[in-house]
Length: 143
Image (cartoon, rainbow, N blue to C red; front, side):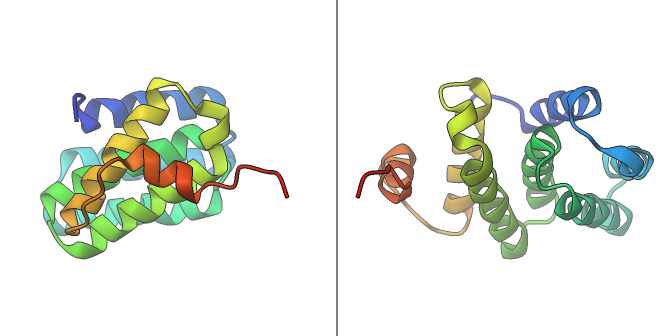
């Protein structure tokens, strides 16, 4: 990866506050993110899990979903267990399925692809080209 996931996460969160419809969840997001960013161990893990639970209720909040992907990378590096890498793969694949065609060719798209590859490599998967794999698996229309 040629970017800092923590910085990208914060940029995505700022976009989420400005553009996503977070509604009543915003104060909970702010509190959980503050705890996640300032604590370690069990407190940070609980804050991370709170953010993930909120994200499950806001599947169309594109920037918030992006934030969760990069926050999951931070959690995986803090607590290196397969569950976090699996969650990262799940989040990236859901994100690309929902928003991939809208954002193809953007920095966001490239970063999500790069982090997806890192999550997969963390699980021991090896793919020559993640783009080729995604293109193969994506419905292209036709008959």
